[in-house]
Image (cartoon, rainbow, N blue to C red):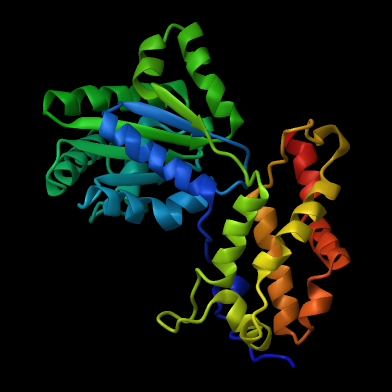
Length: 322
């Protein structure tokens, strides 16, 4: 029987996130770096593995729960390239949610830099601490000039008793930046902003996949405060009968294993790494079909999972990033 599905559901809008073990490791690592007082660290990994969603949906709340106070955090999703210094500081002012920031009326370079520095000082003091954290997403495109501008800001804030820390998140190319900086006579920048690093992995085991599937089964909710999970919303009858995606973990994992490019087949004892994006796309297809009235058995048989995984473009994506 087809269910009446609200088009505003986050699954249909793809405006949601499911918490994953790699997200948990990344956020805990950043928390450890804060505890250790490092001046800068970087997190790298292939695109579509879930780094940006971890930042958008979970990072601030989990770290504020950990530290039991407001987190003095500014998140900058770096999108533009070849910015002038004035544009650079104006963009950062926007990321810091400066009250009077107007992209149509940009401030001068000197004014924007001064106001951003003041914003960082105020943010640190509002959090009753002596540090502020800038997290740069898509940091693999950062230029040497931009790092030098941030270095100057870090020195200035340091003189005022505020520790300016930078966490960079980006693709594999990010891991080569410290060596590049060192070879071009800028080892001091690498030492400041690349003091620590960690890799963001995909889903690497059946247990991790099961954790993700449980998010759709039980650890999700829409509408807000309804207690209705994503699976329950799209397939209430199957849900009431005890059906869960978690039961399909072996079948789904095998489907991904079969579709990985031959040159990426893991060695004995090793495991594949599945981007979270393709798991999400696969489960979204299953939910759409269940919501359209298709029965649980036909949606969750092996051939069905194989076809849904193939439709996500998983094989081609893995070939591109290999």
